[in-house]
Length: 203
Image (cartoon, rainbow, N blue to C red):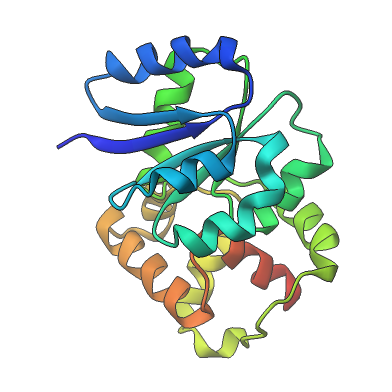
């Protein structure tokens, strides 16, 4: 079954390339490419799983997260050092990708985000925390986590992938994923970026 994906991209010149990329991927069903977030929401997609969002629309992330709580989101940006990327990650975007990346990179990023196989460097996480001072964070003490969960959270903050954590801890990848799910539930977060945010907030 193909993953249902949508794109919000104001640059209409970019639309045909995006549609063709997903059409021929064999993995994704592109349900629509929209110029604005409001146009996407007006379409009322109820089974959407993944959204690619241009950085110019990232101010709408809180609304999109509220209206599409189960949809994972990736930000498309021209520059990785754009301050809006940090705000987008702090607002719940799963990751970001350069607009000029090749199709294989786009498809790999989409697959990684869907599988929660996301690498976020400690440096990026610290910058998110600095930018996130004005965001509301529900403080949850890390004491609610088990020793193993705290260890995995630390590895997440170091930017480790699931397979790297499994190798380091001598456990299966599925066990790592199960621990991560428990961590997200206990910390009341939705993804790795938000979990890392709380990790540094408690240092």
